Image (cartoon, one colour):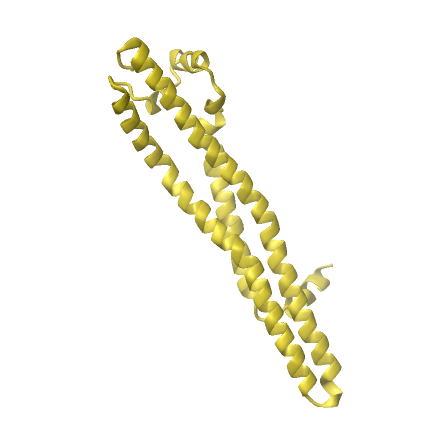
Length: 198
């Protein structure tokens, strides 16, 4: 098995090294984003699904992270909106940038595989132009390079696209959690006309 992998690696040509580097970048970034979003307290506690009563229970039980997100001293709806704009600005832009970067890297996999197809076919045509003795061997080598690099690019990108989709769902859950707390905070300001107790 290991011999077959090594043989496929060498048969893929020079593009196998950039594809390997791409795979490392893609899966490192995906893993880092996954951990960051899964570990976020708003995502972990499913705040986006909480009712007003559940949020109030969390606040009464000294749930410090959720209390910290709320605008405790807000007296108007505009102050709540401004505060949650800042909260979103603290949590979301870094994640959005990493998601865009990951999306670009995932797209590069099939494109690099396609480049391998082109270089492999060029090698095949060059092999046809060479003398009779090596023609078949050069053709096989060029076709092998074309297919292996294409396959490797797809193997890197297809699972990464699925992971990226899950990461985007987690990011959306974080966004909805922030929006949910903003609605709750607005409800408190309008109903009670007083700030959230610290």
